[in-house]
Image 1 (cartoon, one colour):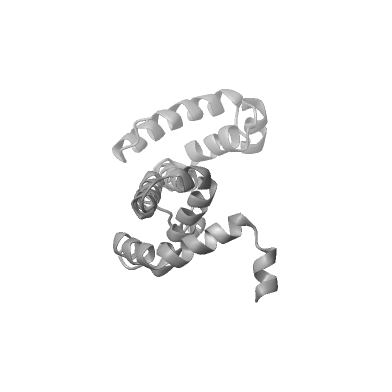
Image 2: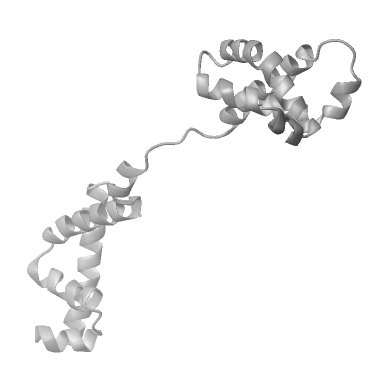
Length: 176
């Protein structure tokens, strides 16, 4: 035991003395501040004693007990911890968000369903003209060849089909 004492530094001796004299009462005080959370209280006491060790020069020159200084430091550590937890947004489990489709996917699906329903209101000839020109991106002449009608007829059908489609979509509440 005597050999161990010879190897200790003044800093280690100071920390042992601080711990022996103040750790128990300081832990009891901090436990009340942190609503009985023992792990958190032990962390606060440890941080308080580390800060005391860092300020050893000032504490050795002080007259009287250093316990009021330790209590003040511990209280400030608890307050700072509370404030930092309040400043951060509350963490949530991202799992439900990963399985939920993105808004643009839902919007696209709803828009597709609405347009499909509105296309169902058109006559077969008008629907075929729109499908060939807009959805298959064919020119009027190409669509005329596929549909086996004159190009002017395709233009006319597309014009009236778009007008009917616009009315049908407006009836469904689509304004854009």
